[in-house]
Length: 184
Image (cartoon, rainbow, N blue to C red):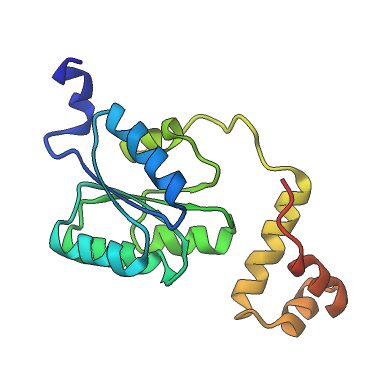
């Protein structure tokens, strides 16, 4: 492959992948290497922060929820050590409130799992004010409702009674909604 094929990446092609799903992170690492990145993986907040502190990469993809904590801690370490690092936050728990938190602390984009290597590459390399293309599979109305409920729940510091009051719904109804997995 020609080196100019990856010119868009720039001279530093280092990419840190932090995800506790071992199979996913290995698969994503292979796919990103084929796209010209030099990958390094971590499967915990502690390992991600250690790599970020010792060898801060030009790019990073960080899962939001890891077994030993919150991926936003890794994003903060990356921002401290290398402010120009382009970070994309990935999560299987797509909630608007956490997306806002990720962007506020410096992530360039936020993708819900399952995101493929093309989505990740496009998010990492997007520049300026260019709007990304519209999603192939936009959220359903049920999913938008669920996202709104999750946002209000987070804003109420995860207080079920206060969230139910603000959403004008019965507390038990809200508890049932919160206990279920997010709709597709």
